[in-house]
Image (cartoon, rainbow, N blue to C red; front, side, top):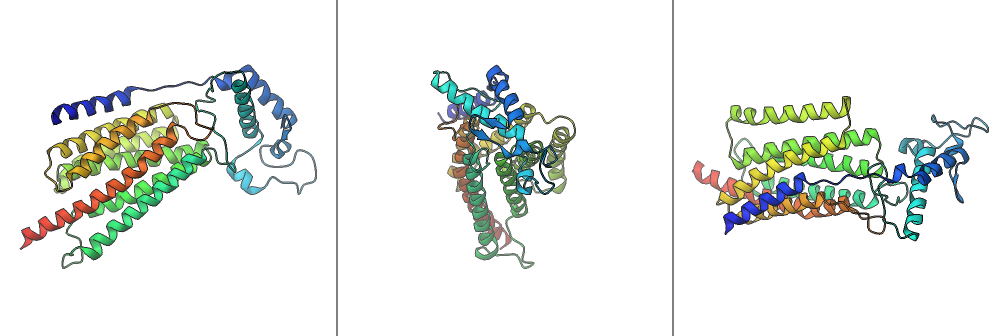
Length: 343
């Protein structure tokens, strides 16, 4: 029964990985395009007019005295006449579609989300920040455990042999969540590159950690053999995204491909291990599969704020807590085992 369940979970994971939905009709709508063109000429959509449309691309006033400059914080966020016109026309067009009984549609490959104080995806930003806080709390709890609550070696190093890997993981995952929040706040080419690059580094290092821990690899040469090809893939992908083509579709396939391999590694170890906290590892494995499937959902945002990506972010928060809980248990378990061996 357990073996059949494992196969079912793996089949579900693969099914989620190969499924994808792509659509973008809103930005090709003649009414939307006409609205944007008219807005860029007049600076207004209905009764809403934008200060940006009185400035050139470099932030200088088209007419008026020299001291009329667009505020620096607005230029930093890169909200310009075109961005404001596209957003206002999108929301206006969606209101018209709603009144006509039509379904929402995508614009430039993304569902229309309502902005809050200039933030493009406020719910995803808030959830990324919350997940970052949970990761930081888990890391601090782990740090206190291994350095203050567990015995240390005479040279003040921990007995737990994976301690360094977990510290690196904590820094990488928090960096990834930070740039994810920034990208959800303002999605431009620079923030996308930083978000995609940090997510790729996280995926690659998570796979390295999964292999080294699951197979209890301690030999340095074996670690190099595991790490080198993964780092090569990660570096190649980052270079491709930053210097050749910022391809979101390819990026998603790479991330899900690495994630699928990682889940197979964790799932195999969870099924075979006699670890005292194996139930947490198994719960993490099953929850990760369900979360990955949730990432593949695609539906219009609820009330204009909550989309599938936001739900995926929300599902990742308890996973972060569960992961650090297992890491602390693993540190206690391995320290106990190594102390017994040293006596």
